[in-house]
Image (cartoon, rainbow, N blue to C red; front, side, top):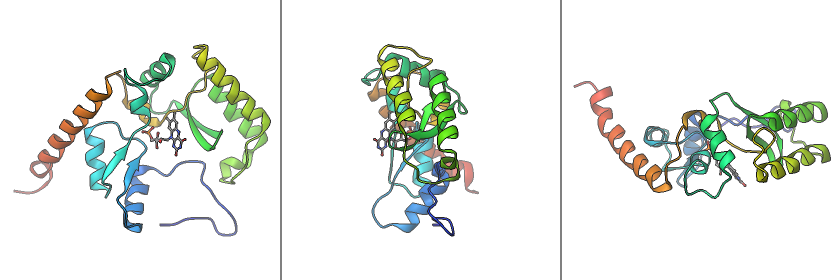
Length: 191
Ligand SMILES: Cc1cc2nc3c(=O)[nH]c(=O)nc-3n(C[C@H](O)[C@H](O)[C@H](O)COP(=O)(O)O)c2cc1C
């Protein structure tokens, strides 16, 4: 697994795609690997198994459920966003991905203005102005201001368009992954 950049610290601001990262980690470590990032249904769980993972962890999918204790505008934003409607910037804890809205754009613009080398992979601390934008974004989330609320979420938001219960999410993932895996030999192996 390649890491680092010759001549200095290099921490990519842009997360490595699960398709690349999961098999690399599964090859490199002994403990069971749980894949995260982009998983939301039975097909993607089946894909994770093929990549060498023993299971998946989901963030965005679970926010968009009836039971999740997240704000309604956040759930709605996940349903509405397409794959390309997220942005990465220097967030509270490091590089973070936001559902695209005016607040997310402001945080990206501030990051570009104050910390442009963040986008070259330098591990930079956040600053007061970025933190202020984020704090205001949290306030606006509580006030249900969808355009200026701070809402994290993955590109997988583009594949999420409903608001099921957690039980329904789990049941459909279990059923769909079994069906997908069961159908694979007939689909891809020669008779
Ligand atoms: C609202 C939210 C908060 C999160 N907080 C953390 C965190 O504090 N630490 C962490 O390692 N990952 C955190 N994550 C990442 C998730 O644990 C998970 O790895 C990621 O969301 C998986 O990608 P997905 O959203 O495409 O399913 C967070 C994700 C979301 C959406």
